[in-house]
Length: 150
Image (cartoon, rainbow, N blue to C red):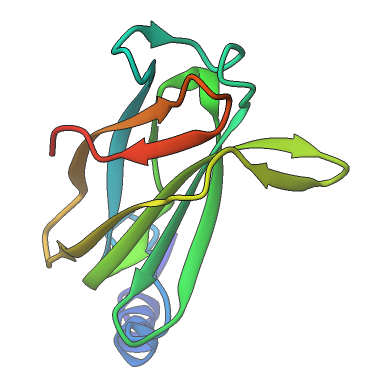
């Protein structure tokens, strides 16, 4: 159990490092938010397919604070949705791509990345919904990506 002085000290430390990273108190309060998203994969003819048919097992989400550092997270493709780890407040560019794990690396499954700019995490935000991202697998076997609803 934290004393009042320890809690005040923790709040001061959080305020001092807020620009660099999320900071949590014992009660779970945070100066950060998270992005949530879902995804679907379809053929260029509009037929919905699964991750295996697209030869993919991973969705990569790269969240970059405008003018600052980025954080890359990896999610199981078959989950068809994810929530990022807590991120500091600010304006973000989020890139979402489809890939496959191979030899300890992620091989991309396409040449284009879905890029969503000017997404904001504001004070009080917990989960900011990006919406659905649609990956379109071209009939030729190469993949291209298109942003779905937002």
